[in-house]
Image 1 (spheres, rainbow, N blue to C red):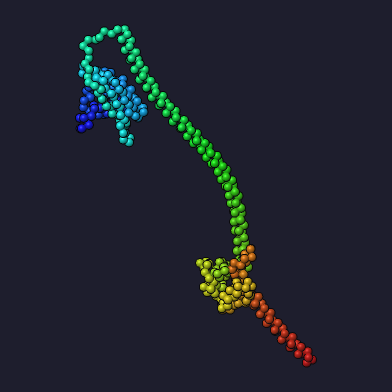
Image 2 (image 1 turned 90 degrees about the horizontal axis):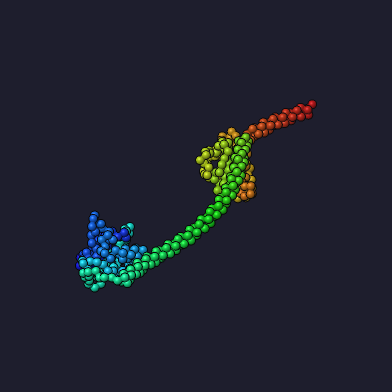
Length: 350
């Protein structure tokens, strides 16, 4: 309210000249045009103001700076008024169109229009025409200067954009070359992996065949075998080992000392520890449960292909038939010896 009362007359417009706000006292400078209502400030500008108003607004819009037009002679209320026009860009809110304040300042008072047209000589007319042409030329030069500056600014921006695009293009080209190199490296690595994978498949097949051969060999020999690690825990065992130990698959990883044997094994743990300590071989003959079977037990170190001691192997060879045959041979030998002795006695008597 205080601004409207004590400040010069002003209006607020957008870049197209559409009125946003009007203060009091603008009737000296603006008037409603005949016909349909029009809120464009150029349509409402009084005689002598329109051209300077358009030039000042264009300069303010183009440069973003305050534009001032001095010594504007306008017709108003039956007289002539000299004014200064100030176009002030207003701070714009985010996302909104820029606004501009037009401030009208009077320079001196209103001068009355002459009652009769003065008689103009040819020189006066030519002088007036020259003045008008000079003014138009000056305004044209100002507009040309503004346009030239805009073009120079646009050219600088385009040049900067071209340099940035060139730099980006070089970076993209470099990235493409790096990607191509990486692609070739990945392809080479992939080929190597395929070769290694093929070799591994061959190794797996060979290992599988070796395991199958070993399993069939151990099964065919009917030799009960228990493999222990350096902590004397069970690593694996053959099926026939269940005849001598109460073993199940879940016993793998348990200490052998925790598994109950089916034979008299008072010295087994001591024998295993001695073999692991001295790296020798211990062989004993043992009897199975209730003395029905006889076995040759061997305890020997478990050696890897690198000759590293990785545990202990305990084997049990069933020699029941051999022992029985030896007993029969012994009995027959004893009977034969008795008969030979008897025969010799008879011969002596004869």
